[in-house]
Length: 264
Image (cartoon, rainbow, N blue to C red; front, side, top):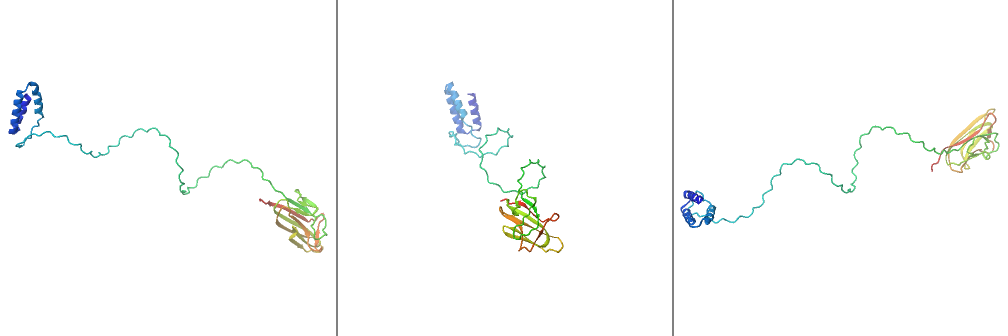
């Protein structure tokens, strides 16, 4: 009740005439109500909002309005300051292998490196097979028969037996390049000899005998032979140039050997 009186006093000082009248009516009503209703009226009086202290002729308090609608959401605020770096997490599961990418462009050649240390010595390899074919023969008597192979029967070397002393011919058993040479002592007559390959003369040597003298003649050639080819020497002509000679101090020789064999 005391709070009501104080509220009325406040309104008397600053309120207008109409409000004063309403307050007086409310006061009289409170005096008539029993004590339990007095509290309810007190609460209603408290709900009245005092008017502003301005000129308010004919002013009356209105009924409280309904709550307004929610406003639109506001804009996002600015980013906050980055927090401290967290601890490293556990490694995740290994993903599937990706497809092979395209080859990149070849880069520029780098600088030359320093020489490396020498490697260890390798194991000895298997010995390569050596092809051998050679002969060296000499004349034991004077030649008298022309246009047939000269039979050199003094054997200096014929380990592979590729030279046949009974025919005077060399038989090729290994295809390749061969070297042939002959050295002839000339006595009593002129000498004209030919080196034959497969029934064809490929080299000629002529020496004119000097009377009361012993002369020398020689020749050499490189020939490529196939298996089965034959090579020999013979006097060329009709017998007038068969001055080949040999004795215990003069020799006439015929030699041949393989330089290198064919690889095919």
